[in-house]
Structures are given as C-alpha cells and as structure tokens.
Image (cartoon, rainbow, N blue to C red):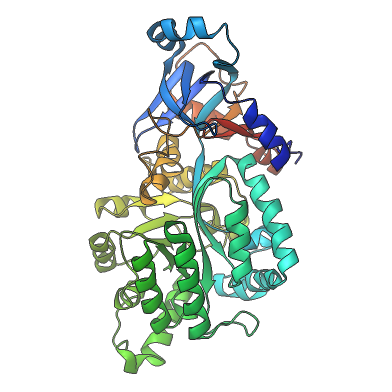
Length: 468
C-alpha cells in the first residue's frame, strides 16, 4: 500500500494554506442519521466555515449544489474572487461520507492481525500476548505508535476506543500520535496472565490513578477481561474512572469456552469474596461496579435475557466486531454472531469495531461488509449498509458523548470526512440512494490491496490529513 501521508512539517504547511474563511466541497455526499435514515446528494456540496484561527472548520450547510449555490449566492460569489476567503475542493468524482469511529481495537496487536486464527484463549497466548510484550521496549513502542497512528487516517478512521498494552510509555505514545477523537486505555492484567505481562494490584491501580488524572475523559480504564483482572482491581479502578470522568472498557461473552473459564475462576478462586453463586459473566462486572453509561463491552455474543436487562439498566454500550467474530475461513476467531436485533429490542446501545488483531483488517468498510454478509446469511434483512454506516460513525460518537460535534456532517459539527472514488458501476442515470451507493462501494472490494487503497482523502476539522 503506497500512502502519501502528510508528515508533521507538511501538515503545518498544509494548514497554513487551508485557513480560508470558507471551503466549498463538491461531491456525492452521504450523511447518516440513524439505522434507516441517510441523506443522499448525488450532486452534493458541503459549505465549511472556519471557527478558529488555528484552522478548524465546521459544517455550515450541506445539500444539493443548486441549493447551496442559491442559498449562499450573496456570500459565495464575491468571495470566490478572493482565494484568501474561499477555497473550492473539487471531489465530484468521489463519494464523501463522515470519517469512521472504530469502537474497539488493540493498536498493539497490529503485527498479528493476519496471523492464522485458533480459539480465542489459544490465540491470545500464542500470538496476541507475545506481540504486546514487545512494547516493553520504549524505542520500539514509540516507533510503532508513530507508524500505526500515521496510517490510521488512510483508512478513514478518526475516532474510537483503543486498547494499549500494560506499559505506561505505550499509552503515552498512543495519546501523542492518535489523530482524532479517541479514548485509550492500558490493559489491566493482574491474574491468570503470562509472567511477562502480569502486574500487581498496586502497580495496576497506581498507574490507573496517574493516567486518569492526566487524561481524564480521553482515558479508558481497561480491565482486559474478568479472568485476567482481579475483582478488587476492577472495583477500585472503576471508582477512579468515575471520579475523573474517564471511560471503562472490557470484553464480555465473546466465546463459550471463555464464559466457562471465567465462571470457573470466580466461583472457585473468589467464592469467599461473594462470587460463589455468581450466575453470569455480566453479573461479575455488576458486582465490581464496572457497568455504567460510560462503559463499553466488546463482543457480547452470548447473553441471557437477564444479562441484557442489566446492560440496558446500567446503559452499558456494546461493541460488535463482525470481522473478528467471523469464521476462521474469513480470518476471524469463529466466536459467533452478535444478535443486534435482540440488543435493539432490549434498548441497548451498540456500535461497530474492527478488533484488530482478532480482526484481520483496520478498515471499517470491511467491518460493514462483514456485518451485512454474516447477518444476511442468517436472514436478518434489516442488516443494511445504511445501518452499518450509522453504526460505524454517528453511533460511536454518541457512545463517546461527542455527537454534538462529531459523527456525521450535520450543521455546526466538525468537518471530519473521507472521500472514496465513485465506483464505475455507479452510473449517473437510474435509481440511486444511500444503500445502493454504499453497496456499490463495498462491492468493489475484491482484494486486500483494494481494501487498503479505498480511501483517497481524509479531512479532520476541515483540513486535509491524508491524501493518497
């Protein structure tokens, strides 16, 4: 994959050249609102307005070209004569859509996402944990962070929820290099973990307190999952998160063997701590006060009705990772399929994530494809591309409590968007809507190379951060 990524110096020059008062972006525009509604403008235009001397742009308006030109004729016509006041961005041969929120991924597992998959627990011990151990080397961590987060905009991802390793410097490296709106947490591993990754309770809690104080709402307390983090550490770290306005993230009910393993630990090792008769995996998290409106639980494939009621009551959000949970033949861990219809009936919030390295590709387009394909095979026809787009963009921003300024291209929101080449199969004549356009884009993906080269432009707050 060849990427013409702007380095820091070039970004500075680019920003200096992008501080016009207004920008007018032309192209085919998709703007999701919910599971069923997505604005579609075949000949679209987005008017951006600068709201900061630092070159930050928000969406002033969007719609058909004729609508924008007519409504803002008095504003634009005089200004178009002055390059310092208006800039035209011509993407008429592209489809423009909001940048993505990848709501669950492990940046420290990038090197193993294409490794052969086995069962979850075996894969963790054989590939994921040894890979994370490399990040104990500060120079290695710094180098990989710069490389990884520099390429993330080339996939159109500018927000989400990230897992780091146990190492303090690794999370600082991630925070320093991540471009966009992310929450990031260092995994907590105090029990049933390899010797080279295990922490004491005191080490884990001391680091959580330090990072929560430093990063606040950008930080996520991250017990890796219940079998690797003792209940005292989970409970105390959750209290720290709530004190500093931080998020909490972990894994839940990804695999049937995992569930049996978790319950055997808590009903055995911690039976004298009030877990002797614990009924479910979710009940463990309830007992340690981890569930909350600022909590994200990844996977959540095997949940009872009582567990769903508990998650709904606590307003805990779930993150579905279809490419990671897919069959081994599709480079996944073959864990099963998240029942999104059940979650929606239970009024549980959810969004999409790649789960790299369990998932094979960083691209949210691949996640959207997998979501639709797997559910259609189960005859769940409400799994549409429009739903997938909403769950890969605005739904994530809503879970992170930043949807007033992020997530789609609504007025007054930051101008965070991507552009992909319009598919040749998308003729200018004939019936078109958001579902058809998304289907045509995703149908063009027939190889890893095409997947990795799909996004041609990525704009963050109205400024070009990636150009292929």
